[in-house]
Amino acid sequence: MTDSVIQLPTAGETVLETYERIARRGPLVPVELTGGVAAWTAMSYQAVSEVLAGDGTVFSKNAQKCPALHDGTIPADWPMRAFTDIDHMLNKDGEDHRRLRKTISAAFTPARVAALESQIRRIAAELIDGFADEQGEVDLIPRFTLPFPVRVICELYGVRDADQSRLRDWAAILMSHTSTAEQMQAAMGEMLAFLGDFLEAKRREPGDDLTSAMLAANTDNLTTDDMVNMLWLVIMAGHETTVHLLANAITALSDNPEQLDKALTQDRWADVVEEALRYRSPVYSANLRYAQRDVTIAGVDLPKGAIVIWNGNVGRDPERYPEADVFDIDHDHRGQLAFGRGPHVCLGAPLARLEARIALSALFNRFPLLRLAQDSALLAISPQIMTAGPLALPVRLYPAD
Ligand code: HEM
Image (cartoon, rainbow, N blue to C red; front, side, top):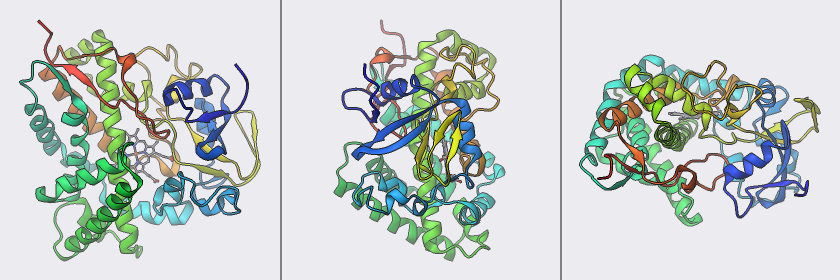
């Protein structure tokens, strides 16, 4: 094995395997992103904590503050510009970020999330009813984990039933690794146009929903584009992450039936969710950050201008977690980093936790003997480098005869 810089992604292996190789190299590791672009990945709990502590001071999330993106070093058609150049709060710092986050936070309150509980239970039950009688294999991704979060977000936003399937289809196209560039561009354009019209309709006729509450909370003169981009970001940030969280939790419970028994008999679903987030985070690397000065992270010198990503799977860091590779819902989850930390800490974490708790408890209470129909090590994994999870989740709801 050579010590050449690891490519992320590397052809011929899954992104999970690539991240495992990177983790073996140390706490902060140089990598080569798509197109040969140089970057660093923070891999250990300590390194990620230090990077996040520098948000807004040592590190910027604003692409304008990354010289390589503007001086010709990185070409204009670099595919990752789809993440770096888009105008939303995940790519802003300081006051620019604060005014956007303040407005949505005033609407996305813990009370609004808690009030969704009965609708979330209903959505989970309806989806489960749709496959409950199947005696053979069921792929839970199209039948359960994929439609579930987008239906919840539609309830949260106040999207009419008739429009929900359109939003679901656009989100699915944008997240699918088999969509063409034209399909993605078309879906993006149609989705943003729909959200613009939807926002105007809510302005004329407000309801008891997050969209109307966000419009009412807009005392910082956010533009319509700011708010449309915000609605878009929340759908996209909250969708695939939740799909992967559910799939990872179902896989881990199927592989560890004694943990499933404990969850069922002791009603430990909140701990199942925390452990699933620790054991395999849906976010393998969060959006790019740009070093604003020379800095030392976890003992490694990083030059000004460096592009940095951080690994959300720090729950496997053996220096932080004893028996890190064992799925055990009794692990201590204080200091969990799967949702990030600091100014950009996941806005949807309370909703994600509630959704996952309800979905997993509804599924396994209905089918306590549910097991994967395939060896979990053989599940095909999505090829994206930012988020990773199974592409299909074949299960048997009842033991095979
Ligand atoms: C299910 C598991 C989820 C995980 C593991 C997750 C993880 C994360 C992480 C790590 C960040 C920080 C990124 C960074 O620092 O660069 C983040 C930010 C964010 N998340 Fe989540 N997320 C999840 C679900 C959700 C949900 C359900 C929503 C909304 C409904 C959501 C909305 C957001 C938003 C809007 C941000 C940007 C916050 C900001 O820039 O201030 N996420 N998420």
